[in-house]
Length: 338
Image: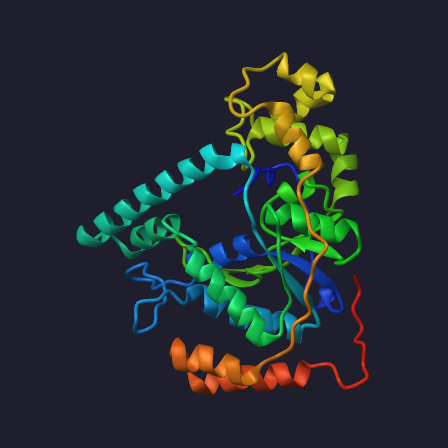
């Protein structure tokens, strides 16, 4: 989930077409969680499954949304999380407990005949991303000829590293942690752009990708990157619960006044892993420079999606033809902006 800074940081809304020709490092776990949350039965809250009971919501979202990216001239490189730092254990445990409680609430809502909106809300909070789902997502990307990278640790750290060294133009994630890891640019709403239905009113709104640049964020908030990390730690990150009573605005004010992490810690009741250890991880996370190119495999794509997971043969054939039409011509290097 990451640090929550949406109330104080605003980006520039943009059409998907403005990203044409750009390479983007996409936070895979963040994206798959979005698909698993959104692509569900509106009445029961259940995810899509095949006849063997295997969840396919993430595959559906990944297949169609990635194809849309490619049609728009965007080259996504999906980045998967690796081994988390030891001090993330408490956060991971808390999230598992929260999902388990949400799952129980979801089942109770169904049994009690609760309104569909309440059922769906509880279902979304119970989303789990399993190892089997991750493996199937990687396999699908292989079949589609779409590049992916296995991060040694946090996916957002790897995305930021790829943006810093020029492998990609921007990181793409819903989480603000990309900035704490130093990504020069962040694209939000990439995987959920389009028309979105508001739950209570039933009305629809347009959701566009949003561009934010780290240099502009730091300038607007009058902070250095290290100070922004300190703000994030006060609010709460994936690695610590935050300091009670400190939201974004109060945290920014304190950091602007006290300047250093040491001075800030002297003013608050810190709880969680050692603060300097978290700061050091944001500044120097484990990253990799390995990235394997991929080639479209039409027959394997058909077999996986139609034969194994029972997607519509007609729809998959349309996807195959689209992807084949987007393949670089022989001798062409393509025109991609990093």
